[in-house]
Length: 218
Ligand SMILES: [Zn+2]
Image 1: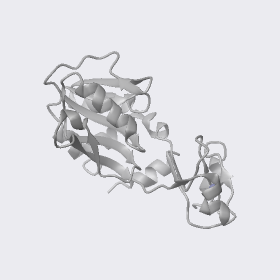
Image 2 (image 1 turned 135 degrees about the vertical axis):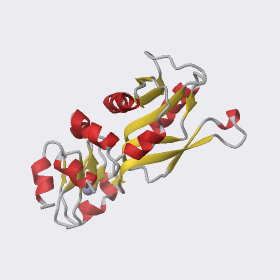
Image 3 (image 1 turned 30 degrees about the horizontal axis):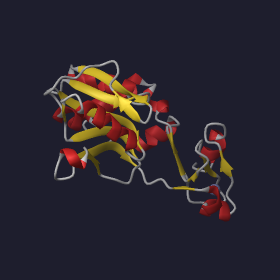
Image 4 (image 1 turned 90 degrees about the vertical axis):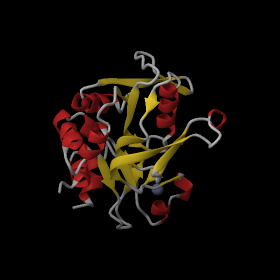
């Protein structure tokens, strides 16, 4: 069985704090401190790896097969564009992506039709916010969204996303199952509340200090 977490770590797509209080931790671009770091572009830039993930029986292969018959695979820009394209290539269907438009996501360049089946994909689900906006953009066209989505990494702490506005559905919307290759429990803190800082660990920019961060995991 392939150890996907190990492969993602080797490619620099995931770093996790080793637990040693002396080991440095991550300073994110948001200014928050964290015991982990995810950069999926380090794997989505490798088409052969993504193809392996999408076809492998111990990867996302069986889940993607369940989506066979879909007319579209759609992800959100920019992170999920190539993943959607690779998944659509396996399913022999079309791929598209949603883009930011102010506070929402919009399906600006693609036109899904009422009744067409759509599989949603994401590179990483952090809060699920952009995925839900993508859901709204696609659902607004009348297309039928499959009840599960595929993700490379789920760090949201959730197994399902609840989509759809309550006013459209008296039951409170639609529940979509998250099927991820890798599920992580990564914590973030405001600097003044960071327990790792309190223990004397230094906070480092992951991309700039990658070698130092990974040196503690060997
Ligand atoms: Zn800290």
